[in-house]
Length: 457
Image 1 (cartoon, one colour):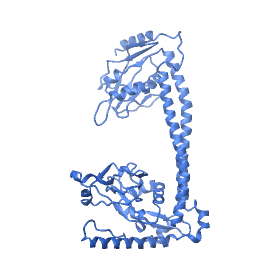
Image 2 (cartoon, rainbow, N blue to C red; image 1 turned 60 degrees about the vertical axis):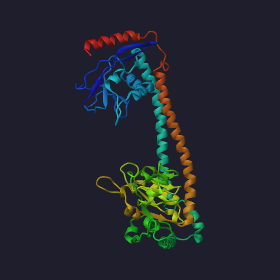
Image 3 (cartoon, rainbow, N blue to C red; image 1 turned 120 degrees about the vertical axis):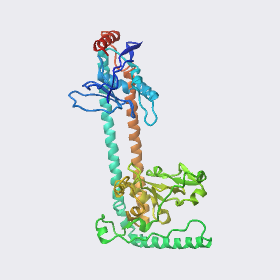
Image 4 (cartoon, rainbow, N blue to C red; image 1 turned 135 degrees about the vertical axis):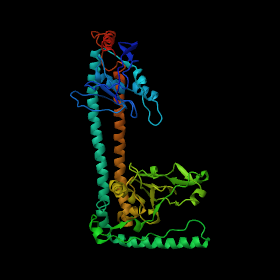
């Protein structure tokens, strides 16, 4: 249902401006035709977004969260821009009401005070605003283009890195010094088995107290048919399944009904904290008691975390632990740190593969990864020394990208601040000169009131 309101009643004077408000409404159950020049304003949720209905608009419907303001002897764009100015937007913000979703009541909207100069001055203000905004938007468009190009460059850089192109010359110069990936994988698997046997011996020697060590996952290697579907790698590299090289763990959440499980000294990672970052602190912690009574594990520094659940951004995002931590059931822990491999290599690869990883998940209600799918994910394993060189080059180049990106973000923030500054000047009488030959605002206001009475509003 549409909500309509007219906001024209004299309040107080300010220079040649007048503050105007409204205390009579068209009832909500009366449908109002939307016409060219009407101003639309969101009054629920993203409060304060305004737009003018264009000429020759097609019929459309609106949600109840949008109010229709029908200007009388007022420039529609002047009203639209004024509604977005900080004084009014702050008024909306401070007077929004509601629990689940805040909104502006029509009566609150009706009491909103706006400045009313002469019609000629309104038009001069609008013309100046739009001339300045056009210049500003051209600059913003260039900045956003540059921002998109940086994103494309980042992806291209990582693609080259994991195709062996960044280290091609280095690899040729050090060919005799490198342990090939196939040999590396066999060594990793042997070390994992030996570690498991040693941990099991200690566990049994301690009377089987505590959590039983988990054996390395046994996965069949990639078949020739599977390898044929993957990009070709340089000599000395190999495609492997993540579960072949690294331990994959799914976490758990200790019962929240038991207070003694929470607030201890053990870090506990939630899925929202896995956001292409390094994790140096967690929002929540658990106790030894909570750890002992849940199936989560404590993972070492250098473990790569992977978000597994969610339709939002979480699924497919990665992070590196800079602390020992447990985690919830919506994340996978990939213990790269138990090998000589670089956690950063896997982290950057998962960043590059983010969209692809998201497509791996499937489910009726909520798309998700699971331990099996994570274990089966493909990874281009390169020699250890070459992994370090890859990260060295990536870090150097991405440092430059990050600096440029921060510069662009700062420039975009400055552009938004300039936009708000333009609006503030416009609606404080500082943007355009006043013309003494203009119709006085008091005469305009009288004409508005007469028009309202004639229309019986």
